[in-house]
Image (tube, rainbow, N blue to C red; front, top):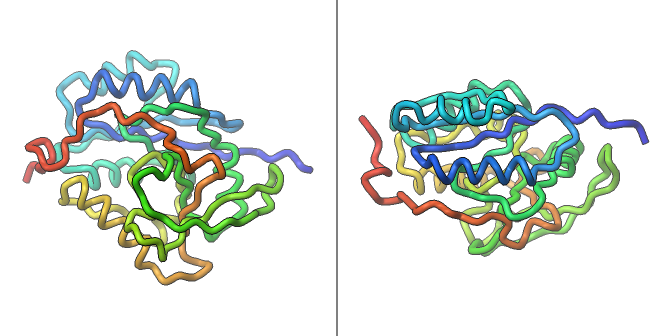
Length: 236
């Protein structure tokens, strides 16, 4: 078997004003991400207090954090600005209050997305709370034959896609576009979940997959939800 040269992955941390939680999240990602290729780290901040991003950059100098900032424009605009600035084909997205509990095997996720062009995204979060139909598949990759589960677009639950931690290839957004901005958090997630589910069910549509380890809950959600609160309202 030839040696596979793993491409660079950008670890994108989506944040707004969670100085304690984001540090726990970054620390556990450093501990748990398993990847044989280069990693770039990026912070997408939606207008936190002065010094928030600069303090993170200073505290994690060894990560050489890049960053983008929006001014309280919501999750969609914040993430879209980050994605437009990121040059890597692969992005692992993690919100600032999802703390990883186990190894995050990006080797397998990248190898799977490299080999299977019908896939656009691999979820790492665990599927607890989502009623989904799973289709067992196998794929020959540069690191060997991998089993995976494709999430059926005919699943009863809307959230075949979720904002929860996931790895995606650029082709996902090339095909479906970026996130809708100007919406509260929950509606932003629902709008993109509809893009995934409503896309015609063909081999060229960007499907969502999980690895065999991807069913149990894999992250601790440590932040207090801001959905429906004043913090979820956008600055017009």
